[in-house]
View 1 (cartoon, one colour):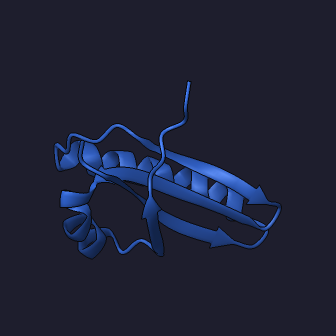
View 2 (tube, rainbow, N blue to C red):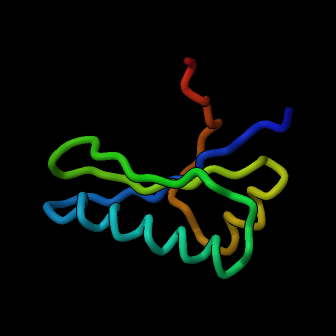
Length: 82
């Protein structure tokens, strides 16, 4: 099984939560426009002043997406256990 990478865009400040939610919409639009086989996106609120948006891709596609979308960071994606 191919390793998956979570690409992350961090947002800070009082508008971080709304910005992260809005950024996820742009990630979904990009996936649709580029006809990518990706289906994991989202956003997470860390605190009142820190939120992030993310998308998950297979490691083989990470460099292409990183160069096109300029995420702030990435990490190995761990699927939640049932």
